[in-house]
Amino acid sequence: MGAGIAEVFGRAGLQVVAVEVDEPLVAAGRARIEASLDRAVGRGRLEAAERDAILRRTTFTSDRGALAAADLVVEAVPERLDVKAALFDELDRICAPTAILATNTSSLPVTQIAAATGRPGRLVGMHFFNPAPVMRLV
Ligand SMILES: NC(=O)c1ccc[n+]([C@@H]2O[C@H](COP(=O)([O-])OP(=O)(O)OC[C@H]3O[C@@H](n4cnc5c(N)ncnc54)[C@H](O)[C@@H]3O)[C@@H](O)[C@H]2O)c1
Image (tube, rainbow, N blue to C red):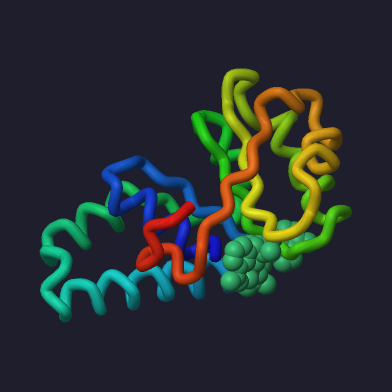
């Protein structure tokens, strides 16, 4: 889901920071987005120049510190409250106080996830459908 969500934001013209847990997974995530964009180009739904522009404005990294300047952070880590809570606790310290933190959870209570941050009023549920680049519903 994370690759699909990053692609959606990139295709919408935004600067994107795509974060994975380690370098091999960063490379795999990048390859996934490239393959999806290439398919769109092959089907005539995306200009090749726009694919290149999307990849230029997307930063692929395993460094969560790169999220310090983000206005919006969407998590798509495994569907476990402890994993999401640990991530949001870290994001709370990394991100600007004005940043909005969003969870892509399918079933966990958003209020419980929000309680893991010092900014429960700035944590939202933002549930994408799979595959995110195809499904327009959020
Ligand atoms: N798959 C779907 O159809 C779908 C649809 C909507 C929402 N969701 C939700 O999106 C979230 C992710 O689902 P998915 O299907 O993409 O799962 P996935 O297992 O395919 O991906 C999980 C991601 O989290 C990373 N990860 C693994 N362990 C981690 C850890 N300890 N800390 C941080 N990151 C870690 C993985 O590298 C991977 O990028 C879940 O909350 C799920 O409920 C999934």
